[in-house]
Length: 240
Length: 387
Picture 1 (cartoon, rainbow over the protein chains, first blue to last red):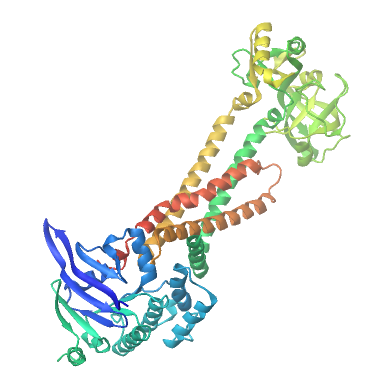
Picture 2: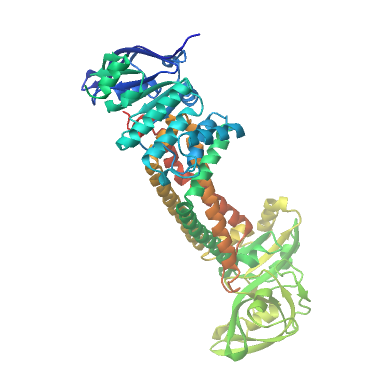
């Protein structure tokens, strides 16, 4: 059985600026397996957010292939991409993650509604997942009634509830204090491993890399280094 | 179907969780509804006050003096013309209509201004009697009153009323017995009373030169045709038989009532502008709302909500808010209408009110169309600032 959840092959994304091409992502290739949590790091402008947008089927590569669960994104039309995002991808964003007029549980259930899978058993599962994330007493709270960390945890639950192939997180700790940030990423990593999903987290905060299995470092649109050894990753996380 | 239920769910949840904001818009729509319904009712009421007698005539056409431009007060024809017309092929019956204004004296020196109409009982110009009996004799001092006269005064069938008429430079008073009551006969903004031609000629306002002379002219002749499908041929027969006359159907006659068309177009213009203001108000609100929701819509689309779900949720939301506002406005209009006295020309006509309500229900989606298109076009990448 193929264990590869995500395959990125020679992906290029260029934009025309003043008649000249600017390469935001330049010939990047990597794979992420099921149950693997990967960090995509790099300085501002390194191309990591553009890469994440392409993995999320929100942006098309100029060249190359992206396969999620074996499905080639370049061969899909917009309608198929919407379905792919709904069924195979889970998201958390930096901020404005949640739908403000839905409670914590309703936000999580929204993914199930979108996929037409909201049944009684699934509702219980959503509540259990939120309880697991320490939000058992916050199920009926609206996002405005929760802290930033709690909102991020609801977003994590929403990203996982429909058992996606790939879970993407864009700077999930950007609006959190250090203690909350560690808690959120640690929980995220645990759930990725536990549910055997492929996870990719874009972050500029290298300290968060201590919870991932691999670190992909980008610079000027290129993949410059991959940290696979746990010792190397911990050293990177500690800034050594 | 799944998308529809999801859209309904999202639309209703958002309204329920932001009740205050949406209620405010509904109340604005309710006020617009109230205004539009009252303008429509006022138009109907004013029009009705002007034309009700003509609209309810049991006649198919009116015969005017040629070049009177179908204006009743401008037309003068001999009352004997009615007899001539009865002998025209295709005419079932014909009757005179002679119109003038007068006043009924009321207790405490008050007067009620009325239209006094001279008619021949049992002919097309005469109204149906709903209470009491019809005018019996050409010379008897009898009168039929419209129900609107009874509503505005305490006069009832069997009472005697006094008519004040200006004859030359003097006021003359005539006493008449109310023998019957009719309904739906407002004419030229006044309730009507009906008398025979002889009484009408005696009581109509006269100048010095007309004093002591008996007139044989009336304003128009009302004609009922045997088969209304033959209207054109009967008209041709009349014009072939009688010189110096012109013929109009009832809608044409009403359209030529002095001031009627101008009044109706003024009122209709007001209603249309009120609807346009409604479209702008609703459009503005929902556009601002969508601008505030750009990140939220971006998240929705990023996690897999289709444009259909986002657009439909917006449409449903607009329709619910509009329908709620229209319902409140309609209810308020109904309650207020109960408080108006019969002298206020406000009539809630079913058809006109329905047209107004449908127009009001459409202003929501029309006003919100720009915001719906905007919502559908939001790109998640930009909304989430990923680009």
